[in-house]
Image (cartoon, rainbow, N blue to C red; front, side, top):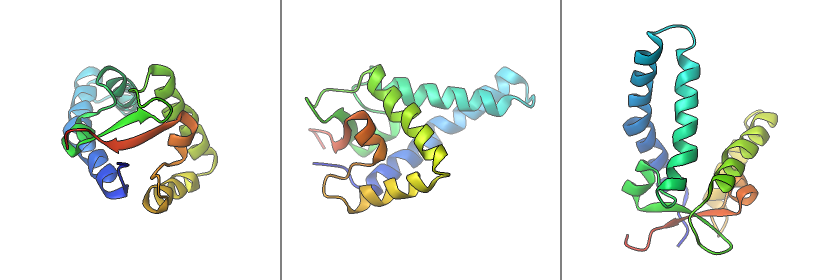
Length: 134
């Protein structure tokens, strides 16, 4: 069963609290609070969202807690590094080029479409579903 807007938002907020806050603290420790601390935080956050689903079967910490995961539409396998690059980098470029309008459209797509897929899901050929044991 596809995961809808609210559970995906909840997973994202959990990731921000549980993982994002420690990443900010780690960035402060690494940089000593220098002006480029924000860049280090962004790089660490990007690596987390890119690599953790690859090595953890489609889950992030927030998604695992909420009982949802990313999988490929075609064969229902966990995403690989190429899939996650498409999902984050290419989609991020599109969202940036549309000045955030693409992000708003994606939120509506998840909320209103029957398959609950957003723009980045279509780009990467993925879907976010409830896991088998939730």
